[in-house]
Image 1 (cartoon, rainbow, N blue to C red):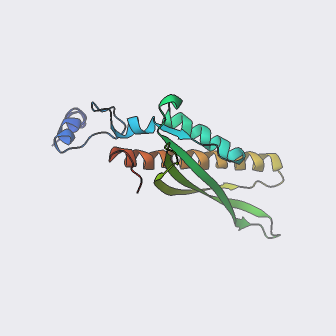
Image 2 (cartoon, rainbow, N blue to C red):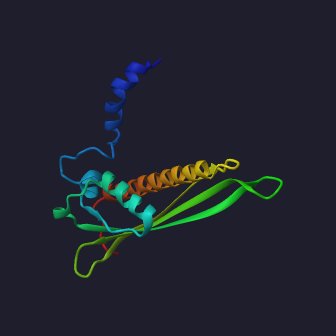
Image 3 (tube, rainbow, N blue to C red):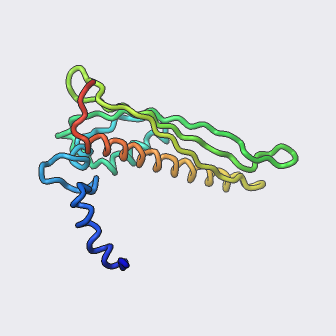
Length: 170
C-alpha cells in the first residue's frame, strides 16, 4: 500500500504525467493565471465594504498599474435576514448574504467587456442580549468575512478564466 510519504513525493510527478499543473504556478511561457491576474486593475467600489473589497482584491491580484490590460469593476450588495427571535420578538440571530457582480473590461478605447460573473456567499452572527457593542462587533467581523470570501471567489473565477487563455471580447 502507498505510504503518506510516497504519495507526497511521487504525487506531483504522477499528476504532471496526466497534464495536471498548479493554477497559481509561474509558467515558462509567461501566460496562465498568475500573469493574467497581475494585469487586472481594480476600479473603485462604493461605500465602506466596497473599499474593503477593493483592498482585498488588490492584495490578491498584485497588479502593476503600468502594465494593466484589464479593468475589474465590482458591484457589491448585502441582504439581511433575521433567523432567530426571543419570545418578545427581539432578534437573536441575523444571516447576511453577500453578492458581488463583477465585470472585466479591456483597457482599449472604448473598453470592451471580456468576462463577467457573480459570486455569492453568506454568513451569520448572534445578537447578544443587552450588549449593543458586542452585537456591532460581531456584525462587523461577519461583514469582513463576507468581503474576504467574495474577493477570494472573484480571484478564483478570474484565475480559471486566465488559465484557459487571455480573455477576448465576445
